[in-house]
Image (cartoon, rainbow, N blue to C red; front, side, top):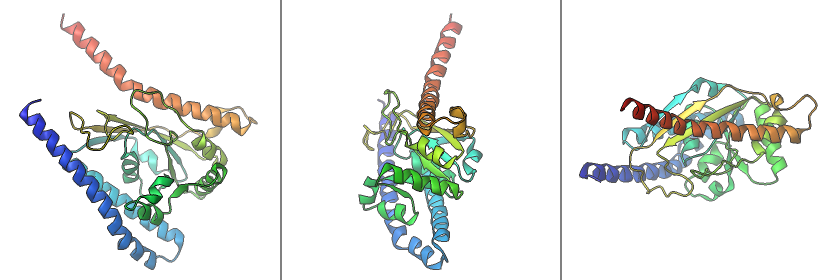
Amino acid sequence: MGFANRLGSCWRLFATGLSFAVFGLGGVLLSLTLFPAIRLVSRSRDLQRRRIQRAMHRVFRLFIWQMRLLGVMTYEVDGAGRLLRPGALIVANHPSLIDVVLLIALIPEVDCIVKRGLWRNPFLRWPVAWADYIPNQGSAQDLVQDAAANLRRGRSLIVFPEGTRSVPGQPLAMHRGAARIAIAADAPIVPVSIRCTPPTLTKAQAWYRIPPRRPHWRISVGEAVLPAAFAPAGAPPSMMARRLTQHFVDHFSQAAAAPAAERAAADMMAACTSH
């Protein structure tokens, strides 16, 4: 590794640590100042939730802008307008730690299902509570019903069917919870494929394991589909959930395989033209 590459890696390591420090401390500061102020001036809990979620959206946009400005990352989005459909279940794969931050930065008002560990995190528990995100606790049936009720009220919801970050190179494994929520609410499903090249901030990778070059996120938003399209009329919900979950696995597996196929085709073309 040359001197310029080593210097770039050292800078990205410092800038990444700085970004996450700002993120954590900023969450605590907002929870002690802005969010309580919003609550005081809001006439209802629903208005409070909407205002705080819009504030979170702006803060996350600022955070992503900061990371891009510092040279930590780049990103592109295809089909961003499809994320603005009200009452949609936004289903995404989960390759990196900041996937939810990227999505919320694109959607002014959206609910999330938050894993219970965040409610014990001193930096994040208060922001997710103020935003009225749905905690992943209690029975699975209660979680499905709560999420479906919010969708029927016209509130969009982000769900990662994997339940945790995916492991690079391993087959995708998805739970049926997202499918069950979509079926219970009869909500349109908007698939979002997220790719990060080179992989970083994965489940098995500490934040300080900086990749050899600046990572690039590509977010591709697909067309909305309805749960009824995945089973014949009158089919039991269990069949619909199984088929819909398999559709998620197939969709995101194909999206992940596309870049590899494109690179292989490009390499073959280069080899052919070199002779």
